Amino acid sequence: MLVKQQQFSHDFNLIIMKKIIIALSILTTTSMFSQMKKPANSNNVSNSSKSVTVFTSADSTNFRLSQTNVLSFSELKQPLETQTCIFVNPSKTHQTFLGIGGAITDASAEVFAKLPANKQQEFLNAYYSKDKGIGYSLIRTNIHSCDFSSESYTYVQENDAELKTFSIAHDRKYRIPLIKKAMETAGGKISLFASPWSPPAFMKDTKNILKGGKLLPEYYQSWANYYVKFINSYQQEGIPVWGLTVQNEPMATQKWESCIYSAEDERDFLKNYLGPTLKKAGLGDKKITVWDHNRDLISQRASTILDDAEANKYVWGIGFHWYENWSGGDMMFDNVGKVHEMYPDKNLLFTEGCVESFNAEKYQLWKNGERYGRSMINDFNNGTVGWTDWNILLDENGGPNHVGNFCFAPIHADTKSGELIYTPSYYFIGHFSKFIEKGAKRISSVASRSQLLTTSFLNKDGKIITVVMNQSSKKVTYNLCVGTKSTEISIQPHAIQTLVY
Image (cartoon, rainbow, N blue to C red; front, side, top):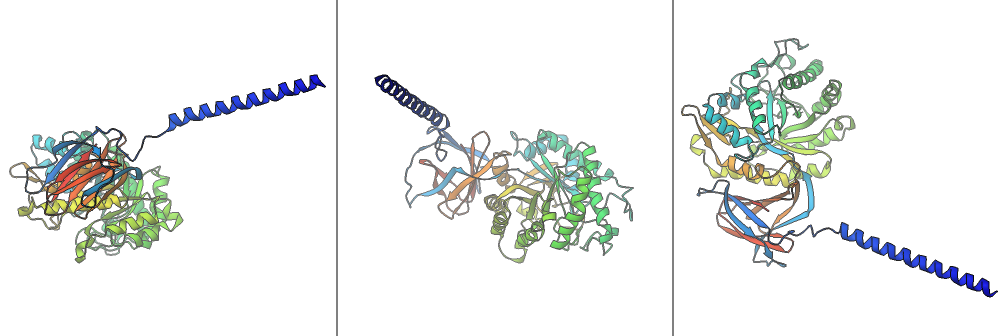
């Protein structure tokens, strides 16, 4: 009996010891794992001595994307109501940034060809070099003619529904060479998408490439084939095509190339013809963007197309322009956010905007640049992944444009003197495009006072880019606050700043 008791006691002690060893082992492992996995406070600046480099463009000054300060963070646990603040929270992430760019139209390419060689290189660097310029990473181009062409043209002969005469020979003179040079200057890191303004006249009910009209149903397949021909032809020229829009401004009857699609028309053409045709041709990876018109009707167009499962599967994103204020109202920024709320799995892409009604006396009108800054900040804050300006270059008359629709571009060329004219819009765009990298995540950025607008992005390398715009006529001193760290910054009246930290 004693032997059994001793054996039981020995076994019991062994069991207790094993449990203690296992418990200690778990505690040790958990402690080690927690130390390995414990994140830094992502809502704070990782290093209190981290510097903030400030770049500024301001009205009535010489500041044009100029480095104006280098500052350091200090402790600020509780801002006061009397302090104006920009609150940035890197732990709250949103959409992934695609890029910023502009359109290479026939007009831009024709003007570029008239520049002397040194000015051509200056121009290419100004847009497409990250070091010497503002680092554009998106290109939009037109499928045959648009208003910013010297004449109307298509890639086929009249009545060639089978597209046997399809040729992009027209584009090889000016447009394709400029696109190639732009891509080369950007180091190949650029995405190109194409948009048609109208099918050929014989495919439309009006038999006119201009002034609206509709695509006839019997030509749906032929027109879908036309996109395939365009993409393949450009890619054979060594120009990768990243994506396309179905139709530029499908609800506008213009005096230039235009074509009307109701929401149902666009939905049905996409799901029954364009989408399947691209897929069958091995081009199913091309990013298809619908709408490509103003913010006013964007939600109705998105709902009609995206609520149809067959159409939805072909849609990469919803494109939009900024001309809804033609009616006298304000830009409808919130409509973009509403679409993002309804369809968070689809991308929002700003596909066109420019300052209308060219007047050479207003080259340096500051509010033209502010229109860009205000739109870009609001569009990004409403979920937009990329932002594409209209013509990258126009001449001293705001053209060429074959119907006289002369407009502003960020850069103009005086074709008589060969000089380039940089407008405020160029610098406003640059405050975003030069610093935000493809793949960056938008992060929370909130202003405490209405004088300031702001948006922020977290680049893949860990750098934070915060853009701040002062809409007021007074200098504003504000605190950039990240967690409990802050630095005090002054911004001039009607100025835009990029903070890099």
